[in-house]
Image (tube, rainbow, N blue to C red):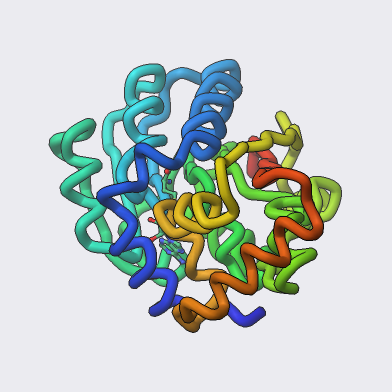
Length: 246
Ligand SMILES: C[S@@+](CC[C@H](N)C(=O)[O-])C[C@H]1O[C@@H](n2cnc3c(N)ncnc32)[C@H](O)[C@@H]1O
């Protein structure tokens, strides 16, 4: 499915008020990312956070990792207000993470639950490494091809997720040393498939499809879901990677 940046921005902007209550897996990913990153270093002069959203990662990161300059970015301008709660002097740059230019090289580029929206991971890595100092760290979480497997099997809708091995291979070819990688699974249960759809909407994942679902389509999805699965559940499959640019 081609990535539509305008649609991603629209869906995340709409979901921001409900995001933190619903993004339990994304919060878990942020926590794991910070725990592992702290083992690499607890201090970076220049940090650039990509896709900062409502600041779930920012909140955890600044508790454990010190920096001199904190830059943050998101497609959604409003993200700045959330990040400022945790980093009052943040230098926020709105726009596509692969196009914005903070004006200096970074010691850490970090991102939680965002890289799955990159159309071409290899190209993204090449752009990001150009913004890293030698020895700089790229630390991110994303999702594996098993993510939302229930939705993919019922609708055919999915992002072009890459496996941990594929991501690692691309990073190594690009000149990165892998310091940490992990894939894990989290299943969330809901009372009904309708609740499951609401959960996805509140975490901005409606951007999987450019069209708003009609009432008929929602009903069809719920009926189909209950025929195929005994109860409403959604499988998340996050990947955490920390790599050093040599
Ligand atoms: C799932 S949310 C994660 C937010 C936050 N990092 C967290 O830990 O909860 C993904 C965020 O990435 C942003 N995003 C998606 N694609 C982007 C891009 N190409 N450039 C900048 N931000 C992007 C979205 O607007 C959204 O706020």
